[in-house]
Length: 169
Image: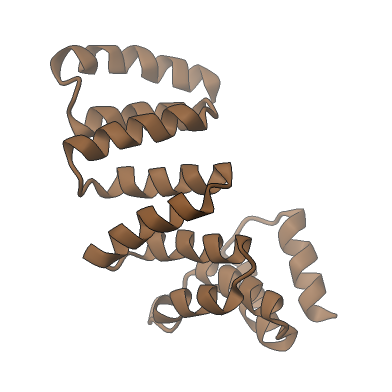
């Protein structure tokens, strides 16, 4: 992926000449920084994008994800709170649920996900997060239902198998 990031950097150099301070330009730089696993630059570029366009949805989500990845849970929650105050967004709800799970607040994660978990469209990631919240809350029987439903739509990883086994036990 680093080769892709280097190629993207070269392409962005032209965009920088024409529109260096446009929100989308800064957001694209943040995406490249994410490919390079450079969270500090992701945060800086997203902040620049949001100064140019405070409502840039992708920059808000990427900024929150970067904060979450760095363990800056308060900043991630603040960013997502501002976003959700202006619009309901499933991706923002999923990220906010991850913040609450990282804090050990499964009740808040469940409440955040409830509106989208009860929706008509099945979302395996929402089911997985709801299952993780129910596991933290101590309700393994209910967690099993969500985790089992999520398995078909998510990549098989050791973390998922472990959580599924824990719910089964």
